[in-house]
Length: 125
View 1: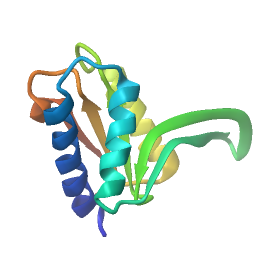
View 2 (view 1 turned 30 degrees about the vertical axis):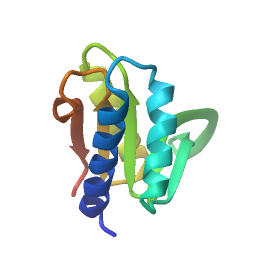
View 3 (view 1 turned 135 degrees about the horizontal axis):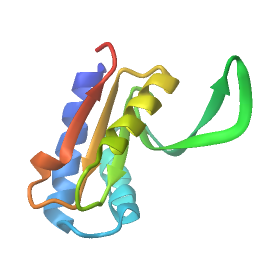
View 4 (view 1 turned 90 degrees about the vertical axis):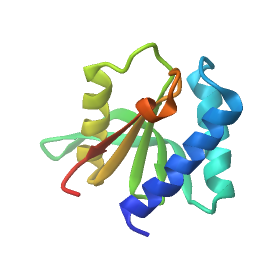
């Protein structure tokens, strides 16, 4: 499956979770339920995946943590905040770049319209 096909299924799962739970819960609740929903839809999921920090070829004893990696191709960064900020987009873009992935979805579940809460961040896609 290609990134765009994966993102279509992911978006469907996000809608399902949001429609059943609504806004305003903690991020961890959405993460766990979304993982369940994604797996129920046959997708391979890695959660809380550590992304090592490599600088000038040296691996440091530090890690970033990707919320969800779907099919080893699409990064999901989940939030439950009043407003998405520039730093959230930069964080996801950095994760995409460092992991050599092409697509990420930034999802804010704390919104009155989940369509407004899903932002696509692409890297050479």
